[in-house]
Length: 413
Image 1 (cartoon, rainbow, N blue to C red):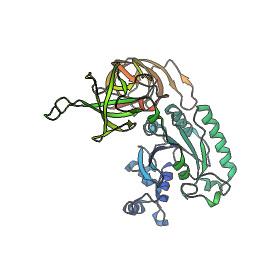
Image 2 (cartoon, rainbow, N blue to C red):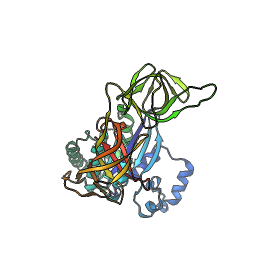
Image 3 (tube, helix red, strand yellow):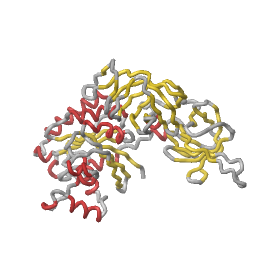
Image 4 (tube, rainbow, N blue to C red):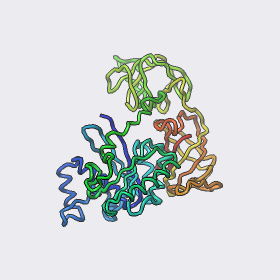
C-alpha cells in the first residue's frame, strides 16, 4: 500500500483544520476514546455537534484563538492508500511553518472560501508550492453551503485559480466544490451539488498518481554511519548505513563516492539485516563495497553517469525562519543529509515578493518569513542535485552555529 503526503493551504478561517477533521471523521479514522474527548471539548457540543478543527489544532493557543499556528500531522488510511496530512497555518507570520510542512508533500490541497474567492494567502501558499515543485494540486472551494451551492460561484473561482496556477508553473489543479463543515464532497458525494460530476476529495486522493521520482531518479545513497564491529567473527567488516535518497542499488553496480569522486563497486546490500538483490529509495539500508576506500558520514554514493553537482559555491532559494535577519557575510552551518559544513553568505541576489512575484534587488538583509535567492560559499564541497531536478537531494537547512537552531530552509540550485 503506497503512501501519499499532502498539505492543506489557504487563508485563515478557510476551514483547513475542519476539512482534515472531516476526512478523519467520515473515513472512520478516529478512535472512540479520542472522539469522546473531542465531544467534551467542542465549543458547539450543546448543539450535539463536534468541532472537527480540534482534531488538528492541538496547541492550547490554537484552541483558544481558533487558529492554526504549528504544523499538525495526522495519519490515516483507507483500503487503497495510506496518508500523512500536514495542516499548515494560514497566518502570514507562520509562512515558515507552511514551508516546513510542504517540503515533503506530493499533493497540496488549496482551500478557498466560496464567499471571498482566491485571496492573498492562497496566492502566497501557491507561490511557495511552485518553488517547492509540488507535483499535484487540488483546489477545494469550501463553504459552498453558504453560497447556496451555486455552481457559477464554483466555476468562477476555479477559472481564476487555474489562471494563477498556470502563471506560476503549477500543475493543472483538480477543482472540487465542498462543504467541510457538512461533509459535502469530502468523503461522500453531495446530493446538494448534483451538478458536480467529478470525484470527491477522498476519491481523488486515492487515485492521484504516486510521485516516483525518488525511485526512478539517479542513484543517491547518503552515508549516515560506518559500521565496524571488529569482532572475532567480523574482524574486517566495514558496512555503510544510510538512506537511499533516490534511485536504486544492487550488488555489482559501479558507483562513485562523492565528493571525493572515487569509483567503487557494491559488494552487498541489506535491509534490516536481510541481504537483498536490490534496494530502492526511500529505504534505509546497509551496503558493503569491494574496495577499501575512505567513505564516512556525510559522503554520498552516486551514479557515475548522472552525477550530482560537486561544488563549494552554491546558489539557493531560502525561506528565512529566524527573527535575526540574514546578511551578506554571515556564517552558518549547512546541513545536507548527514553532511554538515560551515558556510558563509557571499551574496543576496534578491528577495521575492510572494504576493506579486516581483524580484526586489539591492537588499541588505533577509527578514523573518521572507523568500530570497542567495549565494553561499561552503568550507568543503557539497554533492547535491538542483531541487527542481531532484527534490530528495536538493534540500538543505542553515543552522545557527551558536544555538544549533535551524534558521533557514534551502532549495539548492
